[in-house]
Amino acid sequence: MSTTTKLDLAGPAPAKASPARPRRALRGSPTFNFWLFTGPFLIGLAIFVYAPIVWSLWLSFFDARFTVTPDKFIGFDNYKYMLTNDDFVGSLGTFTVFAAFIVPTTWALSLGLALLVNRLRFMRAFFRSVFFLPTACSYVAASLIWKMSIFSGVRFGLMNTVLGWFGVENIAWLADPSPPWYWFVIVTARLWLQSGFYMILFLAALQNIPGELYEAAAIDGAKPGWQTFWYITLPQLRATSTAVILLLLIAAYQAFDEFFNLLSKTTWGRPPLVELYYKALGESQDYGAGSAGAVILTVLIIIVTLFQGKIMGFGRGDEAK
Amino acid sequence: MTTTTPEIRKSKNRRGRGVMGSTGLYIATSVAAFLFLVPFYLIVRNALSTDAEITGENWKFFPTDLQWGNVSDLFSNSSVPFAQSLWNSTVVAVLHTAGVLLVCSLAGYGLARIPYKHANKIFYVVLGTLMVPTAVTFVPSFVLVSSLGWVDTYRGLIVPGLFSGFTCFLFRQYFLGFPKELEEAARVDGLGYWGAYWRVVVPNSLNFFAAMATITFINGWNSFLWPLVIGQDPSAWTVQVALSSYTTGQTVVFHQIFMATAISILPLVFVFLFLQRWLVQGIAQTGIKG
Image (cartoon, rainbow over all chains, first blue to last red):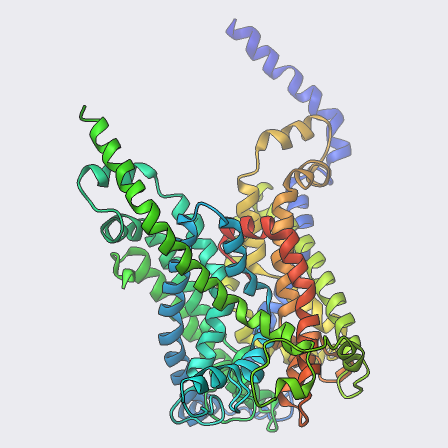
């Protein structure tokens, strides 16, 4: 038996390969196909992702005002300039404040919405769609509604109208940095835009929690509600929470659209990318300093990503707070 | 007995919460939903009002006469080329979506399924780009694109955004889970990698492609920073840049601004209503947007 199978195996194989080989020599070779499939993407990646990073590293060591082919090497001066520049360092502070507001509030709101929607028996799809719908809007559109209608500083703004019904004076939401009401405007705009998206992530995770866990908890006498939420739901959502917080942090770091549009005529509330935009593409067109800023931001986000992944991925359930 | 007691207790609990709990639940959800819908109400109200109604002394919940003339008013405003910007956005979003799907899915498949000794190293090259969000490198990207002479062109708006390491990564993950038997069957039928990909793999992955297409299209339509940097001349503005110009412009014509906002959102609301299934599925599967 064994000899015949061996023969059978050995026999047809070369016979099969020989007619196939000439036709498939190139077209069929895995290596050729690998490059055929990945080549266009990798070439684009090299030109449009890696090359700009390398070029900006190079530019950041030159005096590159109004030019992208500078010849005056200035060492680390651009970095020194950016790191001692009040506007740039201040923009990192703005990001920190923003992240401190937006990350916990979005986490809590999207989880809350997911818990609500998950418990609905009727009209579940309807409510899910309502919370999810703002995801279709752009940050620019939301900024317009927030700036021109809801938080318009004059009396016909919706918020000032509603407050007026309770006898509260008009508030200059965006036009006055003290008290810093503009944070309220910015945070609510982003909350509206992105909570539905993270709600979907939490909903998917909630539906993956095995029902037996709740049954076991009921046997152990846990009251449904707060207790099961605290001891079952939240720990079961740890992986999703970690991912959500990381995504929120990275998204906050890249915040540009709503700051640029809501605070277009102001000098306060500029996060890093807005600051970089004005620095590199504004009046001064300082590509050297702009590139140094981009490099600094890139290094920072890599550190934060690695650090956060480590802390949250392997730490214990502290993200519950 | 021991098994039935908890069953009873559980169902009792559920029923007990049923009346009280579910009323509260629906009230809370409805309040939240109401708040989420307010901005949409404002868009519609303001888009169809006269400026006098928007800025009037007392809050007007809805315009007395729907001002459909605001549409033609918007398109005849010569200071913002809104019609052109809508066209630009359509071209950019469609080509962006088609390009991203084509380039990234091919690469994702290659990385997932075609044996090559350096495939792992190349995958790390792709993964490396995930660490650096593209928005952070817009200054160097602009430097590159402007030296290619691509400022104010469709090429400049579209091409640099096609090579998304993240989308490629997602396609790779998806194809890793694609049933091998289907490809083997295609191989038996004499198809090479290329043929098997187009005749077997793609037709059997349309759900995933639809999900990725929806997400990519929404992002393409809504993106702002890159079009703002590249579209320096008004003729190259996308709809988001055109909208933004209203916030920085000198004169404020409220009904035009909100009609523009409404029109800019409309295509996505349609995409959203009809493709929500794929969108939700895509997000739940991949955990991303953008």
